[in-house]
Length: 306
Image (cartoon, rainbow, N blue to C red; front, side, top):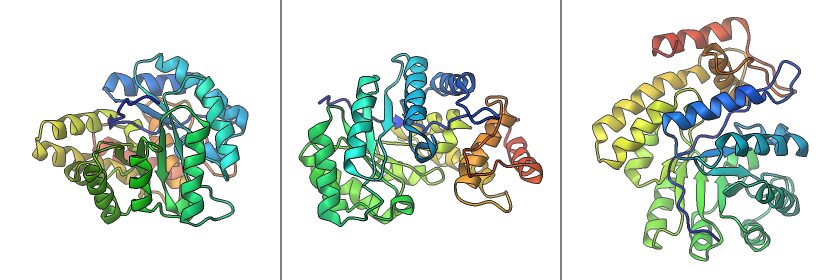
């Protein structure tokens, strides 16, 4: 088990599709290279932004293969092994290891809902079966369980978890997680999945961020991280305010919600910026059109991205 730390800005990669919903390799490579050139510290694939739950096993492997090849060792690649139950996650993890990723990211199982004992056992089973560092992905809105802070700290101390990607939106729990991790000797990298309050997470002691908006504007998140490392909190807040204004692309649309509004807005912005060829979404999610596209265009123009 490597002891490599995963810190800094690690965007969850948005996956572009062609009009007939095949993986758009050229657009994906363009997006990856742009983020790396902006100075990001890693990339997270096969999370929510990478459409993991919409992807067949073949699509998952195609995304991993394309990403690992495009990255070419320049930054660490974290790959989600998210699935309904432990055995399926182990299968995904073994394949991802064979394909050359640097770490694995897993939620708790989410079909047959479990209690804390079963959730903890699932993470321990993943650790026993797999050889790469494992991050716990805390996203209760999707898996209907909030990961227990004491459990996470215990798993970190036992070497089961290398880190946590916290997309719970629970800032109080996040603060206690960071504090508990520090009191335990900092066994884990604690990453926030927020886009709009990353400054607060850094002030709390977070080891980095995993913001989907960094696909659209990676430069601001990189500047913010560097400013936080330098203790320049005025710049950290200034960058955050600007990024929060850009994040309005996910709120100006009408008649859509959830994945279609969030990742759909990222895809639409990337298409308008010439990075993606289309803003196509996986079935059954509809792509943004008409007035919704124009509303996103206006936000980008107002913030100097077009």
